[in-house]
Amino acid sequence: MNTTTTATTFASRAVERVVRGQAASDGDGVKLTRVLTQPLQKRLDPFLMLDAFGSDSASDYVGGFPDHPHRGFETVTIMLEGRMRHRDSVGNVGLLEPGSVQWMTAGRGIVHSEMPEQQEGRMAGFQLWVNLAAADKMTAPAYRDIASSSVPEYTDAAGVRVRVIAGASGDVAGAVARPKTEPVVLDLTIPPGAAFDAELPAGHNAFAYVFAATAVAVGGGDAATAIEPERMAILANDGGDGVRFAVAADAAAPARVLVVAGRPLGEPIAQYGPFVMNTSAELQRAFHDFQSGALAS
Image (cartoon, rainbow, N blue to C red; front, side, top):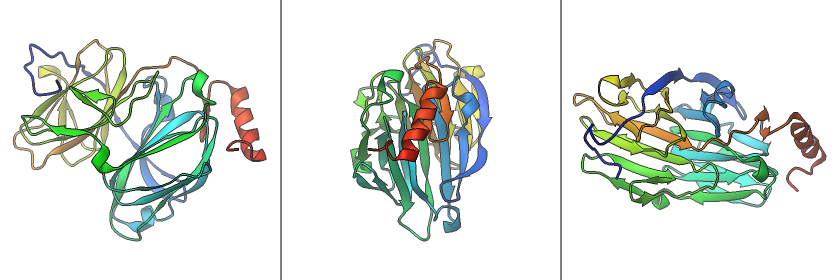
């Protein structure tokens, strides 16, 4: 199980690289931090992008994300705080609330919007892009809203709270299982003085993003690396059982960590904006289809 275990029984992956996100904006001027950028796509295949957003100022998010297209991948929106309304060209309507998750497969094409349903207060969360295999890029679009109460979670003996968004953690199956990329997405809350061993499938590319105000030691023993808040740790593919997280006993507050892993597709990536295909010709077709109104038909 994914519980605190002894160093002799659990081999942790090491931190290969620490990444600080880049300030960016998207949609109608929404301010965010782009953590996983395009140059990292090959290294972190099948993941294409990770955006972190969080602000107490409505001017940073009130414009939202008006209608925009996607083709060739999946979007995963993880809401931490605030409320956002989803509408799309397939007819889906959903409300993202604190703790909820939206998993959308763009497939051959979808046009959607994500608009705030608040004029004040804090809004925070993530959007993760997961690539689709070449054989699946033109599949029918699909959409799933997962309420906070429907995300499986458990608390281990050390007091670590584990929300299992995708994949599995120990004996707990996540809310989502996807073929081919087999993603694992965990939201960890680790109290001061606690440690947690997150098991990860061998061969999966993986990273961890620390997003609360407390630093986390990532890796095993003397090889652990201190990861400060708002930093991403790319984990080495060194055959470990997974990755160990530990929080100092004198930490002022619990740490929060988003853990993401997936099986690499090993296929060419051709991206321009909201379209992710395998060749430039397929990208040109996506633009043509969007401009002609055929992308989401």
